[in-house]
Length: 201
Image (cartoon, rainbow, N blue to C red; front, side, top):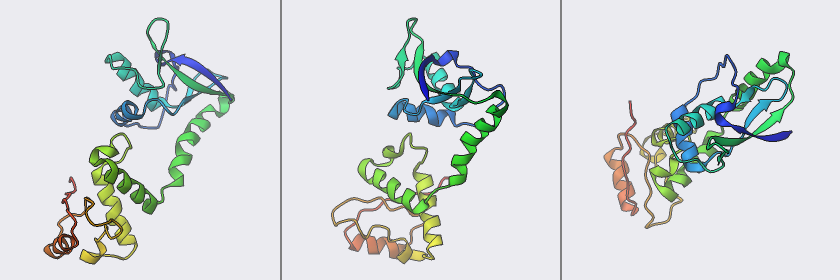
């Protein structure tokens, strides 16, 4: 596969694209991590086949006069320039490839127990701000914890004791909604500090 440099404003997108994008989320993510996932262009047609959301987000940032994210360079006229991957796909197969690039990743799904473990580690290291730009927030983490507990057959105060592996003296944010007095007492006796997170309706 070839890699080329292209101006953000000069990328030809698909006339019809069924994939919706969280442009705001992409902007927040690129502000934090930079441009780290190159878009893909079909060398046969010159059209974009993967990365419509990234192009939309970068275009908005450029028009608004924001600073260039890491991984974005300035062209001769000051326009934003990015790296793109070029592939060769026949025009008749292009629409199918666009769908496949979006759909196959969705079908793969998630290992939610592993997601919970990773997100909890991020929160412990950097607080709620640590989730910024990841596509997950505190509400998502709470729902994942609750669902994992339900899948494991746990419930009540005993099932919500999520901090047993944390050593005494380390602050840990308990992800609970409507925590009862028994759970709060148990956590306090163990020396943990806690914070109640309510789910946004």
